[in-house]
Image (cartoon, rainbow, N blue to C red):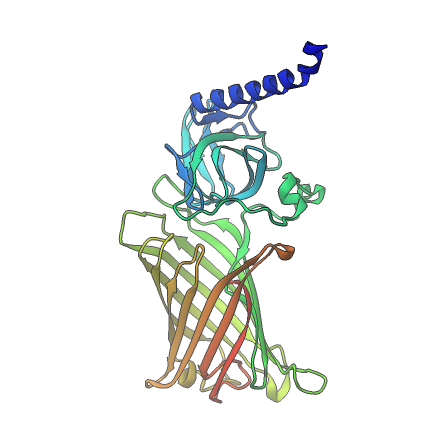
Length: 416
């Protein structure tokens, strides 16, 4: 009877020993864990964990090695975003790996290429964690490494979390691919703001789609891409009777974009450039019809480390092309360029963005200031940005490009 009474205790101890043995094997094993099979394109993928220990609440670099075991060169396009799962102890977290390099690259026979991904380690991670990819259509790749608590990381709190995040579940509908991964992405800011002056509401949404690579990439250069973009901005007189839309600008564009690779060691880094043809119209007819075409060149520079406070300067120059019969003096108010300057912590902090332009002859100045602050709450798993926008100048809409307008609006921003 004595041995029978203590059997559950011995069995629990045996389970704990097995778990400790499993952790020991993972710690002693190298951080390189290879998938058991190759995907359909013949490229074998391997994850390389960060060197040494990582600190909770920070962004770390994870490398993906793409090996070509065949006797012929093989093209490979690394996914821009990889959904993954972190597991540590009894907890799991759904995370996202964001690629630094994009575009199709060629891997020599028997050769390999390294692709850098950024991963934000959750603040409540502790001890040994295992990263497991969840990319559809490819075998699972894993990497393991130890994580230490951050300097100001609080103890994990017992709080409400979405069941999918706790259980590490994926919806069956996620496996239905409705677009090509890494091609559809954010373009200009997406927001909704409201203020005291009519038209009170203003909202904008925008996206871009990578059509093709104009040039091939290499180990030191990202491919030049041809992309289609679309932005729509509306002024909504929401407080008036029947809440009519005051004016809407429809802005499709086609552009060539060349982005510079990330070099963290440089204090000032070039972001790349974009050359575009853009059409802007309010989609109306008769006396209230407004439209114009422009060709613009935009570039950008960043001063400071991306994970800390940094300054972004993005000048843009443009020319008007084609007919301007319903906006003959638009250059007097919009000029031939604009300047964007942003100061902030774009990975996890606030940002202040200034956009300015001046009309021909250095008259008719226009200023817009956007303050965005991240807002997160465990209630309903809400994550967005709080936005306060100040506008003072001309051309907020094509319909009233000659009228000066000043207002402050506030709301939310999904892309800043």
